Image: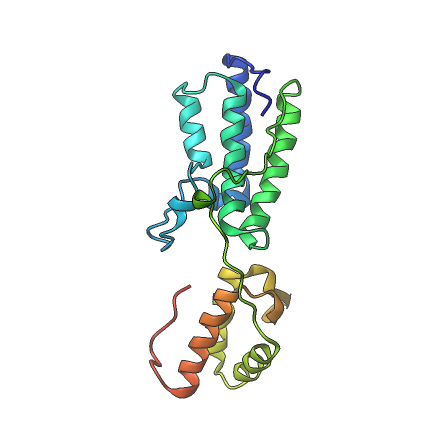
Length: 220
């Protein structure tokens, strides 16, 4: 945000900001961004170490209603922070990052429509001031060709209800890997399955095939 062009937040601007936030909340894509990330329930112990200033649409809306913002830019910066946090924690290839980028485009469109004289938030690359404080993302593991072949062959050995569970797991974690051709017919794009989801699906399939923990379902 350009810090020398701050717009005092009066009732008119507050109303426009509320309209922007409400439209973002009403979007079908914003489900994961309407409330704070429940990192404990999601088993993300490193979330608060990487994301220094958590933010969500519900919190922004509450702060607006409680008159906690002094300028329009302050509010817009915190909305932009939601998308930046998501991209920082999940990386550029994650499905949730793609949704955040879609909502970010929608957000900037709303700002231009409702607040045409206000500068849009600027995404500034983070500088490495102190190497010890900078989070270094570990290299992402890759699924090998042999893993993919084994996965496809193992699927053919499963019962219909087992295949249904695997499909459900993939839908929940890697929606880009699932294509519904027509009713009750679908195609799984193995290359698009997230690595962690792939390994958990493969582990569950192996358990079924070998008979180990046959009644135990892998949670994703």
